[in-house]
Every structure is written in C-alpha cells, then in structure tokens.
Image 1 (cartoon, rainbow, N blue to C red):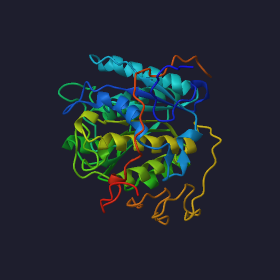
Image 2 (cartoon, rainbow, N blue to C red; image 1 turned 90 degrees about the horizontal axis):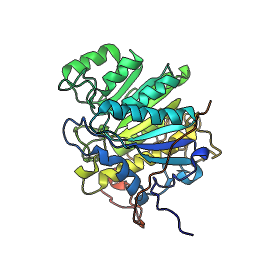
Image 3 (spheres, helix red, strand yellow; image 1 turned 45 degrees about the vertical axis):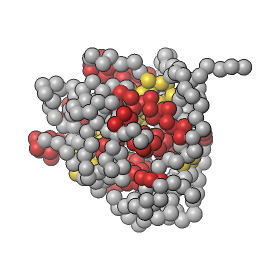
Image 4 (cartoon, helix red, strand yellow; image 1 turned 180 degrees about the vertical axis):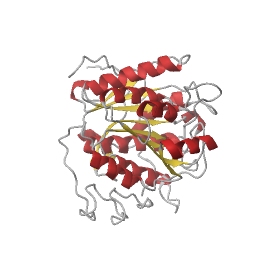
Length: 369
C-alpha cells in the first residue's frame, strides 16, 4: 500500500499522542543583521539528518528508542516579527500544555523569544541558559527592538535579573557587556562555570529554557552561519556542555542560526544535525518532562561516583559531571492539538554515515575507519 511522502527528522515519526518530545521548525530570518539564510535551516537539518545514524556512541542511546514527533515547519509572516513570534508562542504553548517537550529549530535567534513567552506562562520562575557568540543584549538594533541582536534583552524584560545565564559570549557592544555585568550571569569565551551553574539550578529545581545559537562554535568548524565570530568552541566542547545542561530541569529548548546556503560543503548542516540528535537524546533520557522506558546504558570506564551519565573514553570524571567526548576539555490539563506533519517531496537517501569526525580530531582523520 502506498503512503504519503512525509519528511521528518531522522526517526522522529511517532504519533503526536505517543510522543514525549515534539520538534517544530521556525524558518524566520527577517531581522538578520548581516548574512541571511537561516530560514532554510530547519528544512536543511530535517533533510540532511538522513546522512547520520540514529545511534549516538557518545551517549550509547538511539533515537529509535524514544517517541519523538516532528510537526514540520511553521508558516511564518516574514513581514512582521510580532506575528511570527505570536505563531511560535502558540505552537510552543500547545506542546507544553499537552505535557510534552517542545524543541524548536530555527531560524534566526529572535525566534527564541516566542518560545520563551510560551514557557513563561507555564513556568513563571523560568531561567534561561544561553549559548552564543553574541550577547544579544542590545535594547534596539537600528531602531528596532525586535531583532536577533536584541533577543536576550527582550527575554530579560520578561524574566528579570539573575535568571539569564550566558556562555561562550565573545562579541557585542560595550554597553551590552555593561548591562550583563549588572543584570545577567555572563560567562565570556567558554563554558567555564557551567557545571556549577547547573548544579545550583538543579538544587533549586527551577525550570530551564535552553537556547543554543550554533555560532557559539568556532567558524572553523561551523562556517554556515550569518554572523560568524572567531574564537569559538569545538563540537566536543559543545556536546559536553549540552550533556551538562540537560542534567537540570530543562522544559523546552531550541537550536538556531544555521544558514545552510553559506556553507556549500554541507559540513555545517551535518554538524547541526548531529547536535540536534545529541540534544534530543539527552533530553529524552534526562528531562522530567519526557517520561521514557529506555534504560540507562553502562559503558565501561564510567566513574559512577562522579557521573550518572554514560562515559566516552577520554573523560576526566574528576573535573566534570558530564560525559566526555574525545578531544573535549572536560573542565570546561490537556488541550486539543492541531499539529501536523511536514508534507514535502523528498528523495530517498542512502548516504553513508559520515556524521562529524572531521570536527573532532586535530589529527585530521576525516572519516571513520
């Protein structure tokens, strides 16, 4: 029997009713300040996900073991940021009110504001964990307060002082850094202090919104983004940081700022796919929102006294409570739903898995043996 051709992120084809995690795309880049193209990010990540595996050797977990629903991309108004944010908030609110975990794929970083608005309605004591190259704390950009350069400032307007925790920040106006010194918890250049921050938030049991701007990565690893900034982190460092954050009470998340048209090699999209896979697996296995029957796997070499996560060879368990990746510095009431799948025509993919080792090793071993 023939079936409709529906493209989802790899293995994210569970029924909505059964799903614990729900993906939706926010293809919006109308306030991009430099190079546009992030509107193509969600569809590229979805399509190219078939070039990676469902299984993560970093976490010893598999997407096929979890119920994940991909609701496709929103149709957003490019002429009005406020209307786009309204649609994003409505989608996130449906998912949250149905007791599920919303994972949004952007799109430019402004899309985060819509999801944070929805999360704050349900979780008034919300904290935000923010990975980014840019502070995004401008009060306005060229006279416009709704810009991807202002998104964390608008989030601060909602949550207030001390509830935005920023990491890897290495670019912004002087005034943004002055504002951060008084109003946010900013950690410049790296993930230093992240483990302590998550431990504190976990002890308080506060809800966390987790936003990842992929330009926190160094453009040497991730050139496909609108505003690249030298001096970023590596894939292993970002993965370790994600595994740390998801130890907390994360209730919603997003991945944003892939502009696939700016990296014709496809390497940036492949990296974004892998980050999305690892984030989903970490969320499904750790978040209180996601109930799962999947069992925690034990990997030889894990130090159970310092970590409750699977270990990857090379971990320095004495300095970190997160899984280590080779090459990383370890120090461092329901309402009815109207969600639908993303029905687009796609060709069958039989690509061999080459899911990112070129980002991991300075010995330049470009593919798996």
